[in-house]
Length: 462
Image (tube, helix red, strand yellow):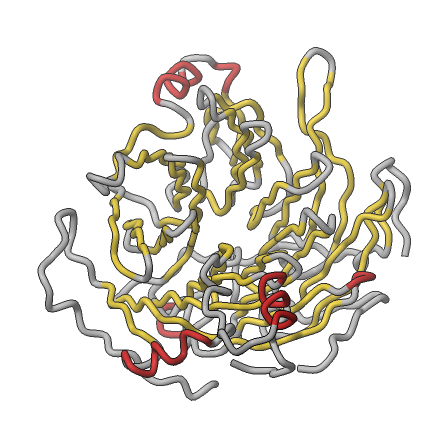
């Protein structure tokens, strides 16, 4: 890929009209699925070079092999017969030899039907959500457990202790609880808002807001798809963004909806808790906004700090490197824009160019930045000192758009030390970080990769 080009001046790219609300559909689906909506992002200036938190004006086709798609021929699990299969990268002898490889594909989880829309990793568990309404749980690339909701495609998953929050196409946030390692089961324990709070607001005329012409709904509930969620563990808050253009703030201790913010002019595609008390939102209206919770009168409310980006193309995904105080925004023009904190400002750092089609998801792993795209590839970037980014690798193998990414530190990455290595090499290994990256695609598969933060050896493609 070579060194990236940092775009410091204004730019405009042609809209990617077929990828709507960060939910692209394949060609064969387009004729049968009429639920997609186009972005109405308005024409606006190019990304600002510098953004002030003090209200100051801003300034300047791969040949991947076909996968075996037959169902398992082993006995069904207690809760539902799983249509997933694990496909190792190599046969058993080759796979054991390849365990010394620090970067590359570990394995694939392929599903018979249903696109992968959401992923979440917690420790050694992986949660996958799809349009089948099932949430599968995996451990060490093997089926561990799972649970099923009655309705609503699973668009977002957040894990908080023994609770799992799932956001759905039907506008509901469902809450599940893990019942322990012995039972390996999950039980639905509620929803957001709670039934009690929803009924209470339903009988209060002042609790209704107009969402469309001749339609009023209680303000505490999303009336359109819940597209994204992010957790603030320090403050015990959960943020949910929706196609209804609102950002809602939930207090986890009592499941109360504290705020509903009319955050954007179009669907919210991504929300992420950042640094310095900031929360970032990205929307199909082409904007990225920074919010902070402040005391307003006698209560704490979120106020808009700055609009970081205004453009024609929809913002599809956000990710934050808290240690480096950097926020990344993927968009439908194939770029990943980023901003870095400079004292009391967020300064526009440039754009990462590595994709031919829309960027659908972005994730951060230490100093690594990963971007998944409708071009079926994943670009791996590394942030160097001074905010310089270089493209280390392009991960290929998916047969469809890469819709979601999640990352977990891989504690086993540096376990395979060779006795013949000298102390300097062993020390270098110990100082390196290894990450397990999960990528979900509209080709109905989840791929598992192992990446080293420092040991790419200059190759460009895996």
